[in-house]
Length: 435
Image (cartoon, rainbow, N blue to C red; front, top):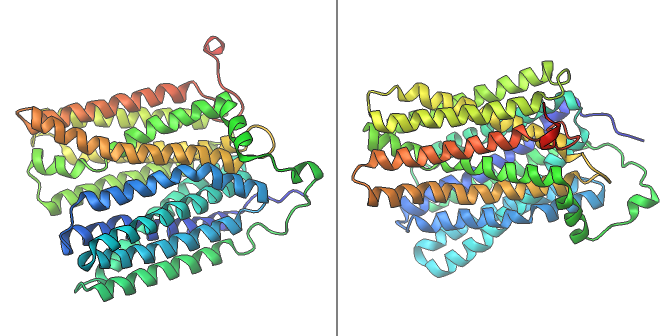
């Protein structure tokens, strides 16, 4: 038998897993980052290296996707991955505390912990997206992508707010208790979210019982021109998307003389724009997405072009200075980023089921690995580019102008790549076939 598509309630339940993932990752990449640098006076490059390592581990995403494909069940991989992630979060917390008294042991334990965090995110997140891709009706995919990503952001916000309140006054014991609570709640939430969601196992045919080796499946996936070109698009667009993360608040402080509180509020304005863009694409996708075949491609291109335009405006703001309307510009950047992010994720879901022999997990894994690689490179490249250019140029504003312009160029290139793809999951559009 063929399972019915996921209902809206089931999609929301799946979104709870994204909330749990976002909460644990926020603990490990944000809270522990601050504790290492501020409370324990460790070099800032230490948590940065650990976070980069957890992205590097996520290059294993295709292997996790292959496992969930061959097992014909996604939920064991989702729950197992969350268990590894939660345990990794607890070990990372203990490693952070140990770094104060025994730095070498703490760093080695932290390396193990962030390896587990990367593996847990890869296994759970890839299988989760593969489940959505295979079980969501095509007309619901944009709204499903928006719902799950908004819930992930909500999970991050709630975790940051609650853990921030409970950590004051700070002590290692409080940190351990808060981390235990976050990890435990995330695991319980995941168990509730996926309980019975896949239904009874489908009858597996003899041909489906044959399990081709991972290397063969990966080669077949990469040999598909559509999958390969979409991988390049994901890497380029996510490189542009992530390169701005670590430089926007320093830009606000160095060029616009904003206080830390004001620059934090500016980040809130950007996130507000992201949420609005996500909601717009989700609502419009649910209403119109099944009536226009090229809908997803058009919104993806629009999001990339809008992001490029907003980054050009930020480059202009670097030259003009405090007289420039910064908040509306940052809001526009967030809005365009939200449109791009949801349409791109929706496109992934649509394309994941394209091709032969049901390889949603492997395809999602390949694109997830490209995204992880882009995030690891983008954040570092953006920050390093600013540092190098500030050292070489007489004015800080010139450094930001150049970096923002390069990011705009990347988004423009991503728009060009997206325009040449049929994101409905059917075929690549050859050069001579377009009118």
